[in-house]
Length: 223
Image (tube, rainbow, N blue to C red):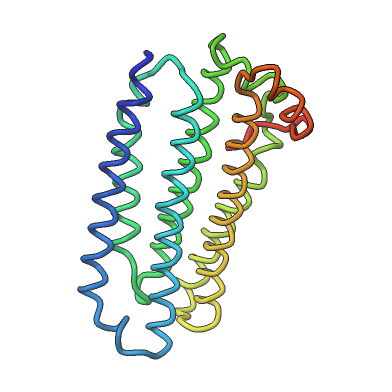
């Protein structure tokens, strides 16, 4: 049980490396990116979104794995592969002609990451070794997942609108911009979780007063 988080992180790091390699290959196979014009703008916006997404997934899971231990399940063992399949699909679908399925894939990956974070946090809360991370955190409720569900629903709705209209103009750019904003929002949530975990870690008496002055108020579980 103690070594499983390290195994998960190792496998996930390999998946992320393969995703970056696939992205680099995709850039070389997409001449429209280098020709300028509106399609190039949409393409590079997708590249930015994918890079930020890969970075956020790595930060999100490393913040869980480094800080917590939990009793692994069969789901945990296939998690990196599920993430990898969605990441590879997202990269392969890059391009103005496939924006709708790309948005569907991003929505699915976003939902998977949020659900997995909650799944891990629920089991980690049961482990005495993680009590510092949850001492000021109330258990998440369905209401806490409404923003994430609304975000995934928005991406699906935008994908359906693009698919129905064939739009590759302003609406397409707005949809990609929303993806970037959602990733930035989730990254900020990860940063808050990381900071709270560090503040909750055992401290010596010399650090205690300083950490207590920085400790945030009661928060709910992210993800």
